[in-house]
Image (cartoon, rainbow, N blue to C red):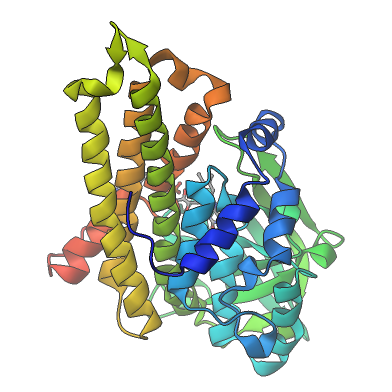
Length: 385
Ligand SMILES: Cc1cc2nc3c(=O)[nH]c(=O)nc-3n(C[C@H](O)[C@H](O)[C@H](O)COP(=O)(O)OP(=O)(O)OC[C@H]3O[C@@H](n4cnc5c(N)ncnc54)[C@H](O)[C@@H]3O)c2cc1C
């Protein structure tokens, strides 16, 4: 199996924590579409969700590469970090662009687990990937902004105290660039739920606690505006490389889980008087998935290293996300095939992980949009949309 020298102590500790949350735990959550609260609490208590928060604000101040190791191990253990991974990258907007008062107020509480910042309100039903066309507005009135509109796919909003919200503060026809005039707010969801915000869960093919969120004249204190009004799109973009690299690390963990399971099953399962793993028709897809996972893993590590060195990493973050998501999906499909009929049985967890890892072909950014980014920004071809 792949070398795991980097952050070996953290990896070992995460593995230990995850061993208390075996397949039965996840199967039950999946069956009931229940939030894995105990798992999230255990991660919070151990400080893993505060890995990227600087020590000055109560976190561990670890590099992104360490956060990657944490998320990779969670997925490799068969658990699912999607219940809380966003806390790791959403807080980056507050950390990099928030003022000192906001940072002192919120980051220590997020680090201790007193407050959860799990909800990220960007996507809307009518604009989709075209973020600059979003329709949710925030209108300044005295000391408040009045928010109206709708978000979709706002994951974990029922299990979060705070939401990072992107809304339009200047109409699109009154800004020079369509990405101008958007602003980021830290919304206290507990207060917003009492003043016009409603949440509607969406049932999905996997257990993901995702929702629609409606804003009807919700008052958000102007003190909760992050950075400057109208520059929010830039703040969101600046966090996206971290998000892509972290999700890519999760995909590597998933791919490792599928490869481990397939390899073990191929060794044990005897058909026609010999282990199925003795047939090259079974061996080769496993070996191919392994090779693709290892190649993607290198790109994830490269992206994390560049990010941690404060260097440009848009190309690497995007490639890492695409290759790792492809590697996990290839491994998922291979694992079902290797298991034959048992790949479809709940008790093997293969079908659950298969459903879970499929998401990363679409979210948080779909493969087509990564290819468009590479074509335009890296290879210099004309913008296609
Ligand atoms: C389970 C789940 C959880 C999510 N969690 C969150 C969250 O917490 N917060 C949040 O803000 N969002 C979240 N999302 C939204 C996610 O980021 C979007 O679904 C994703 O970015 C794709 O947007 P869309 O669904 O609107 O697809 P669309 O933009 O409608 O695109 C549909 C398809 O068309 C393709 N396409 C679109 N435009 C082009 C083009 N120009 N060229 C080529 N192909 C194109 C896309 O690649 C995609 O395959 C979540 C989504 C899901 C399913």
